[in-house]
Amino acid sequence: MRRFDPDDPEMMDRPQPVSPALERDLANLRGLNRWFGACRIVRRVLGPVLRGGGTVRIADLCSGTGDLPRLMVGLGRQQGTEVQVEAVEGHPATWEIGRKFCEDETGISFVHGDVRTWEPERQPDWVVCSLALHHFTREDAIHILTKMRRMARCGVLLADLERNWWATAGIYAASVFYREPMTVEDMRRSARAAFSWEELREMTAAAGWEKGRQKRFWYGRQAVWEAWDGHEAQICRKWNVEGRPWNG
Image (cartoon, rainbow, N blue to C red; front, side, top):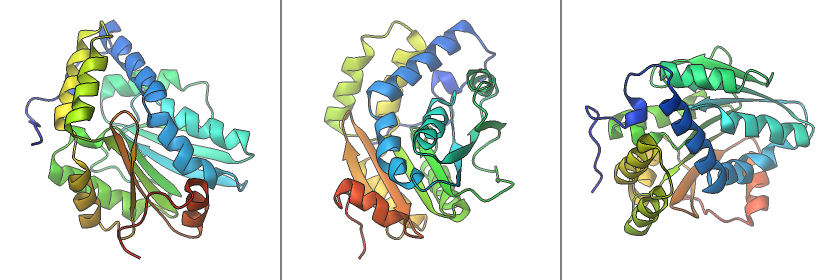
């Protein structure tokens, strides 16, 4: 059973100023993204659609300090495509740290806003949300997924933890290698608050992702994506048609 209390948020989500402890925690999260699958999911799903040249606009929701937006811009640059990312972050201190972390990258615009109410000034081609949905209630999560599908012109990507016994055990085991109390506590809270495979499928379907493709990844990660305007075929060629659709 999912264990989540919106009145008792993870330590990183609580009101706080910019501090060395928060900066260390966010640096640890960048390392976790790099070594435990978040970066891999972005490369696998978005990489094939960033090869056509031109400009691709991406809205990245709950961006943290912007390591994934930096990856997206870099992937595009390697393949001759200009990638412009609106990185949306709601926590004021995290937004400030992320803005400084990405200030040398011209392809990223850091936006301070609540993803539940934020609206882009210009329609993005892709809308991405990674490792953040478990920070919300089920109702808010479905609302965010619905907004993602409505905002995007070409496709949507949602990546998060998967709640199951072996993933939870792995996260608890990995947490012992970190010294920052915020990182240790929040890793364990995240494992308990994550949505299961079945819950995420039900939620994305309820949000209108009619032909979403869902796939498990290493280290207790899962992703759902949906693409249209020809992009689905590009991703399927990359995957050899792994991550089969629910319908069709």
